Image 1: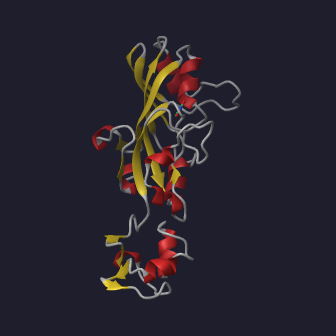
Image 2: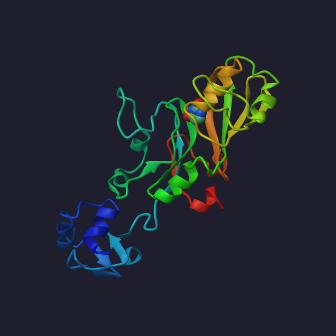
Image 3: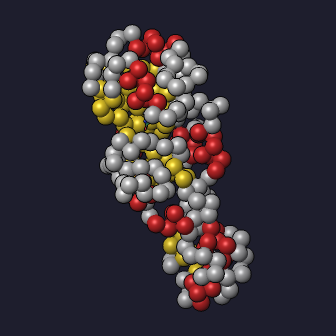
Length: 233
Ligand code: URA
């Protein structure tokens, strides 16, 4: 790949600005100063301002989303977005960095970010049924028979034509537990629990595929690099 394409691909600057970066001596290949933005290089040989190219093999990140942040690229009604929690350079990458699915503004927990379209597609494809586990608290008791109802795959949410896929409910207490889904409909956990008379009070996603939030030791707002195989071995 040409150096100007590399600098643009990884979000350092535009292709047009690349000449300035090269002339300023900011780019090296195998330790040697690069003298033209047309030089063909491989990303692992390149340093920019003395640092290796960030996420040269694709960006895979786990973020502990705090409540109050939206997952859109646009700021709706002044609400902060999760993209404000990560380094601005990531947002200049091509392909762009996206969240893998979305969490509601008031939901916290494990949110994955990537610039790898295949990874994103695999995790969000309705055919793959990747498990997502949520911890909830509710404002009313979840009835004991909800476990059976959710497991049966017969719950029809208002306005939907197809019943929810079987889901695993683990009631730890009448108003606290875990719900594991293998699909991702709009506000699904909130709507399923509301359908059994138990509006959600707090909701946190604690796992996606094989990746759990707790062992990552991330405070809300913190992120860390992961490998795609941490999620889907
Ligand atoms: N279900 C919800 O209701 N909200 C989320 O953010 C995720 C799943």
